[in-house]
Length: 457
Image 1: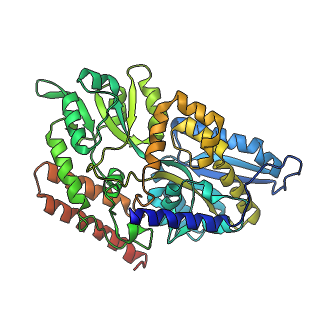
Image 2: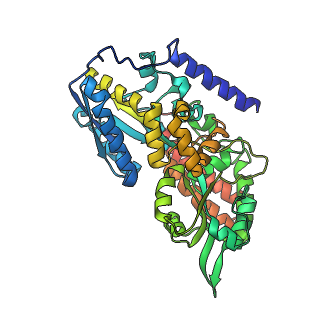
C-alpha cells in the first residue's frame, strides 16, 4: 500500500506541476476567439466499425464549433487496425518526408515505447508546459501514467479502456448460478465455466469461458499482484532491458491458478476462436475483452439474452492492484508548420473536454479520461439508465496507477511466448518452472535484439 500511495502522490505532483497555477478554463462568449487558420489537418486513427462513426461525429462537432471559430478543419482518416496504422506511421518516419506525416495520430498504449522515440513527435509534456489553461489534474491518474516515461507525459490519453469480464446471465440461471454474483477469482472462474459447459457426446457445444492468455490479459493478472512483467517498472521508469515475471513469482502464481481452472474442464484455451461472436451467438458463457467492446457487444447480442459485466477475476483473493489501462493516446507530429501544430493542439484539448468524452464514452464504451465528465447531468442520467457502463469506471477507480501494460518495443514477441508456454504447461508438455524459464528466455532474446539494434542500453 505504501508503494501504491507513493505512486499516486507522484502522479498528483506531476499533474500539479504541469497544470501550473492555471485557473479553471471557462468559455468566454464575449471575446472573439483568436484565429489560427485557415489550416487543414489530417487525423490518422484506428477506430473501425461503430467507433469510427463516433470519431466522425466528434470531428464534425469540432469543425463546426472550435474549428470554425479558429479556422481549423480536421479530416479523420481510418487506417485499419492499430498494427496497420503503425506500419504506415513507421513508413512515413523512415522516409523522413514531412509531407507524408499525419498532423495527429492515435497510437495504442502497447506502442508508446516506439512513438516516444520518433523525432517528429511533439511530447505532450512540452505542449502542456506552454498552455497554462489546460488542467492536467482533471485527467484520470491511471491514464496519465499509461502514457508517461521517466515522469514526463508522452501522449494525451484519449480512448482508454480496461479489460472486463462479460457474461451471459441467462446461462448463469440455467446452471443454477446467481447472475448477480460473477466469479471473483480465477479459481471461481474455472468452477463457473465447468458448470456452464455443455457436451453432445464427446463434442463440446457450449464452453463456459474461452481465452489463451497473452500480454493483454497478463498485464492485469501480473499487475494486480503488485508485480511487473518487465524491469524498470514495466519500462516506464527507464528503458526495459529484461523481464522480471520469472523472478518475482507473479507468473508462477498465475499459472498455478490457471491450470487448476483449465483442469476443471469448462475453459477453452489454445483454440483460434472469435470469443465475442461465440458469446453473441449464445455458445459461450463468459469471455474477457476491452470495455470499449461493450457498445458493440450489446448490439450483437440484441435481445437474445441479458448481458452482465464484471471486474476481471483476481489471481488471488488478496490481490489489490486492479487492472491495467489499455487503449490509446493522441500525438501531434511536427510537419514543420507551427500553425498546424497549434491547431492540432486545439483538437487534442477539445477531444478530452468533459462534453467530448461524454460523447466518446456513450458512443463506444471507452471510459471518460476527464474526471469532470462525471459532473455532467447527462452523464449521471446515462449511468443510471445503463449500469453496465459503470463496471469499467468502478474497476478503473479501484486500480493502482502502477498496474500498466509494459512499455516494451516487442509486445508481439512477448505475447507469443506467453501464449505458447502457458499452453505447454496447462497441456502437460512442460513443467511450470520450465515453461516460465522458456517464456522469459524468448521474451528477453526479442527485447535484447531490439535494444541492441536501436542502441538502447
